[in-house]
Length: 187
Image (cartoon, rainbow, N blue to C red; front, side, top):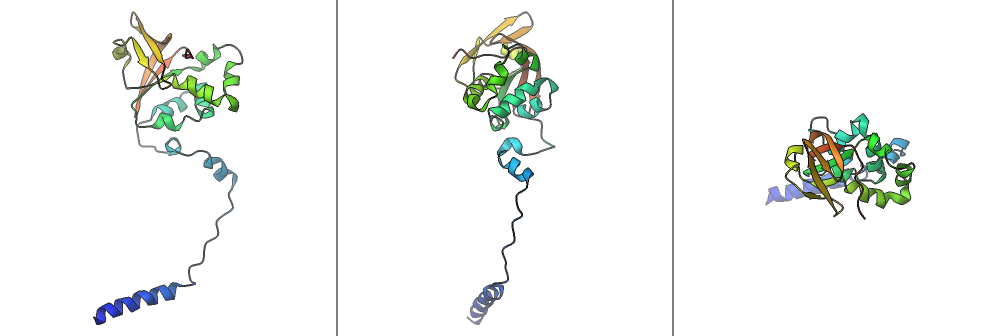
């Protein structure tokens, strides 16, 4: 019984002794870097040098996909591309975007066209992790925007929605198939 009273007294003394000693620390004034990073939230913005690159990291690291990366950022789809997946991304090259009618990319990158841009970009993503050769077994694929694209085989070449697969890169959360055209949705 004495030990219980002693413990209670010790706990009370600790709380009384600490009262007033803990001063709130000043929060440093936000600087420009902090303000900019507050908009960059989610899995896409966690830096990790050890994991296998995800589909977003692969696009960001490619000099041939700077327009695609700018579009993904304008549509704020970065976090969708780092999900566990598996995801297949049909990634149009800069040349593919340049082949669109003049002014199309610039118009789509405007904030007021964010939803339309996101819809078009989702037309380039489908669940799965299939190699180019395995895709030859399909007639069509369901895309993330709830539309379908055709799969055509011409010799050794595979075309997705009319875009030829030029190469493929495995990712930690799927695969990136580099394509030579922007795959436009029907809607």
